[in-house]
Structure formats: structure tokens, C-alpha cells
Image 1: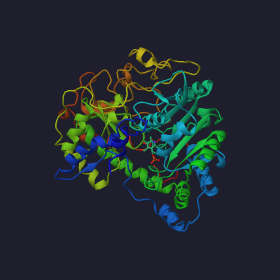
Image 2 (image 1 turned 180 degrees about the vertical axis):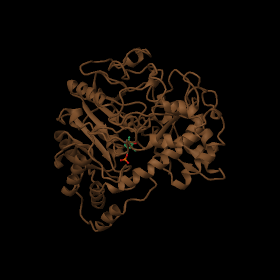
Image 3 (image 1 turned 90 degrees about the vertical axis):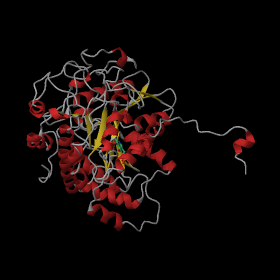
Image 4 (image 1 turned 30 degrees about the horizontal axis):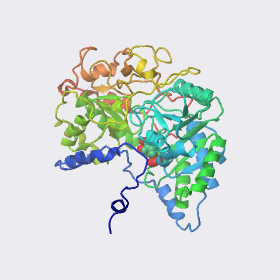
Length: 517
Ligand SMILES: Cc1ncc(COP(=O)(O)O)c(C=O)c1O
């Protein structure tokens, strides 16, 4: 039978235009890495590889006999468990009625602008570099994504800790965004996917009273159980915050049939009630982070931010795809920073999600890593720009980031990052100096995020003792990407300290069970 297009002359097409699905671009590097005699170590997608906690599996199995339709709103037990977790772990109080389960949070992120009724003429402020689905969600709703404060912004996305950089937003930055959005009637949605995976820093929820002033009006927090509880395969998350907004989302999602299967609701209830498995999982990630971080540092990489979350954000100053290729040649697959925006054009994102036995082979592989290539033009990417927060009350044009000069004091004054020039100084883009092996922000005090960082074109705050120990050089005398110049083997103990959980407990963070150190 002829294709309808051949009969009628025109082929019907969707009007949605989205960027290429980034992971498809990595297939050839996966093939290359798979051919390595030691096999593939896949550190590209942040997909958990450790077991689903037994307590969660049991709850799923016990709810297997679920013949009826589930509640879109979620069972009361699930909503209670979510509210309990928020209070216990994040110091956030919500009424359980303001909890709404979602079928994995990617589903919500991609549909939130549309589900909030936004559309053409509305702007969505998304971070950069960032998880690409914020931008995709804006495009799906035919909104315009913008990468800084702008007129017409109806929704602001926050992501702390950030995927891909691992940076935690400072409490003042979050407060300023909330104030800016409230003045304009914009909604703030905070994706808090990695909030329990803090290492040197811990992120704060947008719903914490220190950020929101005690009112959740106009605010939504999005929580995934994929990383915290190894439930990526179950599709389990929830959104909470402003009760009126949550109610509107509930009504829409009831119509759309967006309900979480009952056995998954039962599993999620058990996962949210149990912190022990999170402590176990954190310990696994701490170990992998230590091994991978040391291996990359020895190989001449600079690791920026990465103070929280599931990734190391690493650069050796060359084009991201060149680094992907070099690592594939030793059997290690990573994601190019360009998947997360143009600001990542010299970075790769290294996930902590490979089995320990595979991670243990990475240091040896690094010894065979080809040296860096000359930095070239970026070969991929979705956008340019940076993530800039305005001070409360200041309206900034969408193109302010283009006007801002490196070195100009930031929107928050000294020590805070300001609008970022479109030349690509986003999170983690190389600073004005050469790349430095080792961690860019070691020794950062525990607490809520950081107030500023030197790699955005602002004056360097100076190199830490760790940096100097790590490469055995004086400031200003670094050799970019030279792996011979990185004798950090005798500093692994220091590195482990850097990686461990903060030794001094943050008084504003709820107490942890004693097995989390
Ligand atoms: C920042 C961020 N948000 C949301 C998600 C989606 O997680 P899920 O759909 O598994 O809940 C991810 C997944 O990697 C992510 O990195």
C-alpha cells in the first residue's frame, strides 16, 4: 500500500522541534570503549547499579495484588511518609495533602510548564549548564527557555545540587531567586533530586523556612527516589510545596491518568520511611568518588564543584568530545559537558554509578590515557549562557548576561557569581587561568552551598593547600593537563578527607542517624 504522503502529497508532522536526544550521540564512543580488553566502565548515565533495598523490594512484592486503579494523589500512607521524610531529613514542614506522587520526576520536569498552563509568550528560566529536560519541558509547552532573569519569566527552575556540576546553591542565592520570582508572580520549581547526596556541601530545599520565609506560596519542590534509593527502575518521585499549585496539578493529572502504580506507591512509602539504606548507598558513593576523583586528578584533570550529587565535573582544558574520545580509548565512557549546555564544552561528567569492581580498574586505565589535544571549537551543545541570579527587586533584561563583563562584581556583590557572559562562562567553564589538576574547591566548609567560586571570570580566591599539595607547584606555575606534573599519590589520605562527609555537623541540618559519618 502506498504511503499516505505519496497519495496526498504532504506528510503530517509533529510541530514540536526538540534538540537531538543527546545520549544517541554517545553510541559510537560506547562501542569504542566496549572494545577495550579490560571491558567497558560506563560512567556516562547516572543510572544506579546497586541493589534495590530489601525493605523496598519486600514492600513492592507485598503490594503485588493490586487489581484496582491507584489514586493519582497517592495513598495517605505514602503522603505521610513523604511529609515525614521532608521534616526529618530536610527540615521542611508540609501538610501531607500537599504531596503528589509523580511517575519518576523526569516526567514532571518535562511537562511542568504545560501542566501549569504556560504556553507561547511565557518564558522559563532554566539553569545552564543543566539537566536538559528543563529546556525540553519549556519547548514542549511552546514556551521560550531563557538562561537568566528576564521579563516574562513565568517559571524558574532551580537545581541544587546541580546535575551536572554538583554545585550547591547558597542559601542567599536561593532566597534572592524566590524574592525575584515572587515580585513577578513567577513560580519557582526546585529540582532536589540529589539533595541527600551532599559530600563537602549540602543543599537546602527551597521549602526550608530559611529560604522561603515560612511560606510555600509560588514554590514547588521536586523529589526523586531514583538516586537516593536506587529506584530509577520503579519510576518514583513526588512534588510538593504550594498547596494551591499542588491541587491544580492533581486535578490535571487525574484527568490525564498520570498515576503511580499501587505496588510502586507501597515501595516508595517504605523507601521514604527508611534512612539506613541511604546511609549504605552514600558510603558506596563516597568510596567510588574517592577512587575516581584520585584517578582523574592523577591523570591531570581538574575537578570543579562536585561537592554534592552523583557526578564529578572534570576538565583537562580540551574540547569535551576529545576527552570523551580519549577516555573511550581506555574503555571508560563519560558524558560530554555539552550535553548540559555550551558552558560545558570543555568538561565531562563522570557518574559514580559503576560497580566497585569496574571502578577499581579506572586508576590503571588512566595511566594509559592519551594526552590532551589542543582545545578546539565545541562540537556539540544546546545553548549558550550562564545561570545568573538577580538580587531581590532587580529586573534584568534577558540579555544581561551578554552585557556583563568578566571581573565585574556579581549581582550579589563580592564573592557571589553574577550574570555570566555568553562566551560560555557557565558553571564549571574553565576560568581565565590554565586548568589545575585536583579539586577546584577543596576544603570548602560544610553547610549550605557556596557563595561564589573563582571559575566564572571573577578574581581567583587563591589556591588551597590541597591544590598546592596535589600538584607540588606554586600558584601561577601550573602545567595545564600535564599528567606527569601531578604527583598526588601520597595525598590520597587528604583526598579521602576532602571526600568524606563534613566532620562538623551543620546545626541547620537535621541530625543524621549515627551510621552516617
Ligand atoms: C537533575 C535531575 N532531575 C531529574 C531527574 C529525573 O530523575 P527521575 O525521572 O529518575 O526521577 C534526573 C535524572 O538523572 C536529574 O539528574
